[in-house]
Image (cartoon, rainbow, N blue to C red):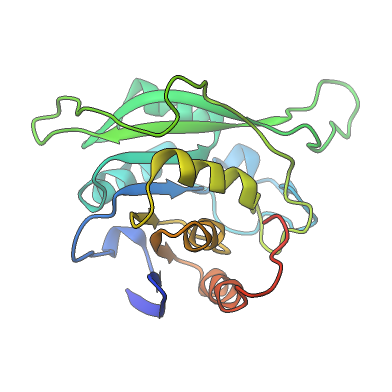
Length: 232
């Protein structure tokens, strides 16, 4: 695990998140892990950039989440494959309670090119929470009060990286699940959208990715924080 960036409360590590060791746990995890093989067959996500990185099986995702449990104090908020969200509800990884499934609705999502069925137009969101050491649920707090788990944001049209999420969506997660000064962990940080949103909203952040290219792109985005960053 190699640290490649450390500035203004944000750090980035290149390597497998299972090897990440933090001096103290992050307050919240906000991330976008790779989807399943079914959605990685050359599908463009929110822009012209094709999916090029390896997919994750549910078993692989669950294994990584189990390793990450001690790195987080409270919530895990993940945009994820709907298949993975379903399995997380059925079989939460050790150290986690499955709390709720949500949806990111895309009003301007990619249409069904074949024209023979409705387009998808949404992605799943999984809301998990750390459990006590004995596996029992912990008390939960967030800033959303009684609002629902439906999030409506346009896709990232100027994506620089595959599956890049819009800053507006991730910023909403940051506002709802953290407070100023909190630390956010993104173990699949990609191009750094979560890190960028955290920095803009006065939070600290730790990112990690197995892709050296992704880490370099995230560093470049964070270094250009005085410039307009678009929607991704």
